[in-house]
Length: 227
Image (tube, rainbow, N blue to C red; front, side, top):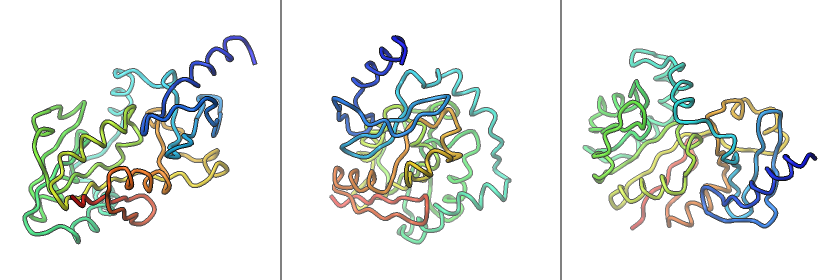
C-alpha cells in the first residue's frame, strides 16, 4: 500500500456511519473494486461509500438527467407498482402523502393521486419546494432514493417526523445480500449509489424509530409509525 493509500484509509477510518453515526476504530472493508471502497458499519450493518468517492452536486445532476423516465411509460409504471400496489392496499380512504425524490417525472405521485390519495412532490434537483417538507402526511414514499443519500440518517429522521400517527414510510431500494453477491452486483456500478441497505439494517432502523417493519418482496420496505 502506498503512502497516499494509507492516508486515504486513515481518513476513511475516522468517518462515522452516515446512518447511525457509529465510528469504528477499524472499519470493516466490505468490498473494494477499481472505482471505490465500500465499508460496513458494525452497528447498523449499512454498507457505505466514503465521501471521497461521492460525486459533486453538478456531476450527480448530470447523471440523473440521463434517465429516461416518463409519465406515459408503462414499463416505469409497472416497476413503481411494486411499491404502489401494496401501499394502496394498506392506506385508508383519502390518505394524503408525499413523494420524496420524485425526479422530473413524478409518475408514482400521479398513480397514487389517481387512486384517491393527494400526493405532494419533492425533489432536490427537479422540484425543490421545501415548503412541502414542513407539512404532515399519512404516508411518505421514496422509491430508488435512499441509496443516493449522503446523510440517510438525517433525511429518514426528518421524513419520519412528517408522518402522522399510524403513517407509513414506504421505501424502495435493493437490498444487500452477501459479500459474494455484492461483488458482482449491478447496483454498485451506479456512481450515484453511495449507501446500501440490508434486511438487518432496516431491522436496526425499525428499532431506532420504534416502527413496525414490513419487507414486501425483494426491494420494498414499509416502516409504520406506532406513536
